[in-house]
Image: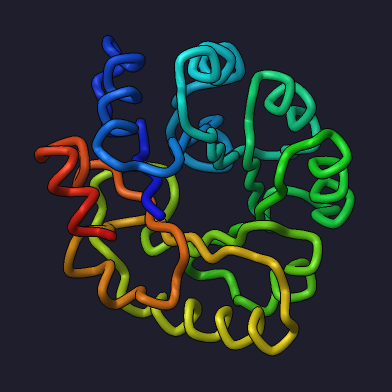
Length: 208
C-alpha cells in the first residue's frame, strides 16, 4: 500500500491534493504531527485532522511526533484518525497509550527513531496494528534514505511471521521507486516529496 504524506502537499489546496492522490491509487493519507519538542519542527494539529477527515475518501494514518502523546490521543481520534502511531521514546507508558488508542476505536501503531534499538518495540507488537520504521530522522521531509535501517524491516518481518501477529510494517523516509525495492518486506510505503513532486499516478504505481 502507499500512503502519501501531506507534509509535501500544497497546504493551500489540501482537499484537492488528497482527492487527487486518492484517484491516482493511494491507499491511505499519511499525516505528520510535530510539536516542536519531540522533533525540532511544528506542523499541524487536531483542527486540521478534523478538516481532513471531512474531505478524505481514504483512511487517515496519523503519526504523532509529540511528547506525551497520551495527552492528545483522544482528541486526535475524535478528529478522525484511523491509524494513530506514537513514538516509543515519547511516553513513559507506551503499553497504556496503545491500549487506550484501541479502546477509543482507532488502530494503534508504534514507531522509533533510527538510532533507537528495535528491541524497544518488539514487546509492544501484539498491541499494535502497525509498526513504523523511520528511514530518516523524524522532523523534516525531503531527507535521504538511511540504508542501515533495512535490517530492522527484515527483523520485524521475521518476528511478526514467527509470532503470527496481525501487524503491518510501514516505512517512512526517503522512499522512492529505488529505495522501495530495498524495503520489499514492508506492507506500506509513506512517500511525500516523491509523490507530490511528480505525476501522482505514475509515482504511486512505481511504488506499488
